[in-house]
Image 1 (cartoon, rainbow over the protein chains, first blue to last red):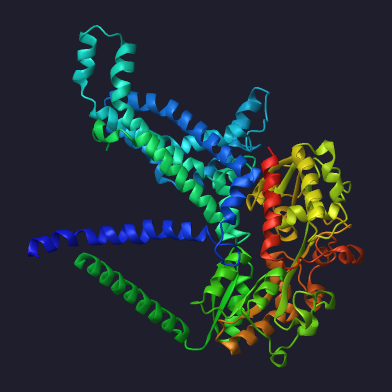
Image 2: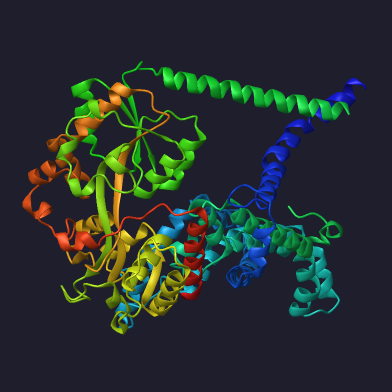
Amino acid sequence: MTQRHFTSWTYYVPYGLWVGLFVIAPVGLIIYQSFLDLHHHFTLANYQAYFESGTYLMMTVNSIWWAFLITLFTLLISYPAAYYIHQLKHRQLWLLLTILPTWINLLLKAYAFIGIFSQAGVVNQFLSLFGIGPQQILFTNFSFVFVATYIQIPFMILPIYNALDDLSGSYINASHDLGATNWQTFSKVVWPLTLPGVKAGVQAVFIPSLSLFMLTRLIGGNKVITLGTAIEEHFLTTMNWGMGSTIGVVLIVAMVLIMIITGERRQDRGRVR
Amino acid sequence: MKKLLAVIISLLAICGLLAFSANRLIASDSGGSNGNKVLNLYNWGDYIDPNLIQKFQQQTGYHVNIETFDSNEAMFTKIKQGGTSYDLTVPSDYMIEKMRAAHLLLPLDKSRLSGLSNNDPRLMNLAFDPHNRYSIPYFWGTLGIIYNDQIVKPGSLKHWQQLWSPKYRNQIMLVDSARDILGFALASNGDSMNTTNLHQLTDAKNKLNQLSPNVKAIVADEIKMYMAENEAGIAVDWSGEASEMMANNSHLHYVVPSEGSNLWFDNLVIPKTAKHFDAIYAFLNFMMQPKNAAQNAKYVGYATPNQRAKALLPKRISGDRQFYPDAKTMSHLQIYQNLSPELVGQYNDLYLEFKMHHR
């Protein structure tokens, strides 16, 4: 083995250790735990319980539904936003401003929204001016989706913005020169070419949304129940780590599926920063 | 092959390094920078008057280190895993039973304790710790209903059953705890709050489902803030939380339904990780002195088990039926027993179903 050969693979040691200790080992442990019952005996009962229980299946459907809604609204807001930011003069500054909220802790943002949406909050004070308040805003499905969408928007805007940045202006000019209308240019040129960015954004938003549990309690008042709620309960209250891990494994499988569905053609489509 | 070997060697080297430094840390911990003049107290957050700690340190010369936890389960896990050197901790009733069964507690040396007789005999020698072999009561309290007199007529809300009344539609906040929520539904049915009967539990869950239209939200600590800000008219929560809410909103009142509710204890125990026994007994005796216990009760706002301390408290606190219920109510209160993991699972699964139903 030559000296050069030796140094080239040593560069991978920190990376390999990192992946091994913090990605592969925890996932392995979760899968291992999911096959243990309360008395640490090997069992398949957790999976059986999961797939036989109407409660867990209903919760899974709920989680997917809420994550879908959050992703949809995030996309509906983020795509036009990224599009217009990209056309602005000081676009780096505007981009920075849209990312700024991610520097604030999630819990703090949730508490801020409690202050805004509560009975004595700003929104209700405003509504009272017109004699239509106070309304119940907190603990509704609306407030949950609103806050979750607000939190996820930066993670969607960034990849879409980058995809738009990679899109050469000459394509758009060519499209117009060849007689395409604005709508045709968008639907036949811009949208397909920025699709990888949209897919990356969907991954970044949908997957965390599946297991939001802090917001379901703080903003949703536990009227929205996702798999995250059940995992928290199994790890902290019932101490049934096996069942908690089983739900975790289901979530991991769901994430892998999403990655496969949204990521298949990324290689051909070029890079996404 | 060589690569694999190198990876294994470097992994082992890292593990060895970690083990070595962990060992050094533990050694320096127990050796202590202050020698043996320390006491490591593992307590709930903001659960002791800081002035008392000052006073104890000045009187005895022991230095008190405080670390805090926010759930019995978290505390249990940390002590069980070892690597800590806590001298005293404050588990609740059922957790004392569980820690005892797991051999995590050291028995008290009664000959070194003075002032045990200051405690209310009704709050001693209970099923979770017969003859108080392992624990000394620190604070106690109940589960009950907090209401806002702008929404509920004062004195009209006295029983669990009334929560189901249609006039409280979308008015009630529940504390996010399986045992307590199923517990009050069981109590409203006249069943034991420690029931192991699946029928009774299912009945309680079905009854809770009917409560759904009245439930505004199921939340945790935030409930204090919401009630103080008039977000909801009624809440089901613990007496200690209630006293904090009432300090911030004079319209709030607390009531323990006389047909039965939960009676809980937080007791001082010596975990098996303890090392500084002189400091431990000095502290226990210090905290049992009526004057100190009274000062602590005034600061924390929970009910003190120390009778002589209670006598020192102002009448408006010690005569308060909300926090020191009368004998008849006391006789109907139930202490949670430590349930088997399977039953804890049952309680929580049913509770999860209720949460799913509630929307």
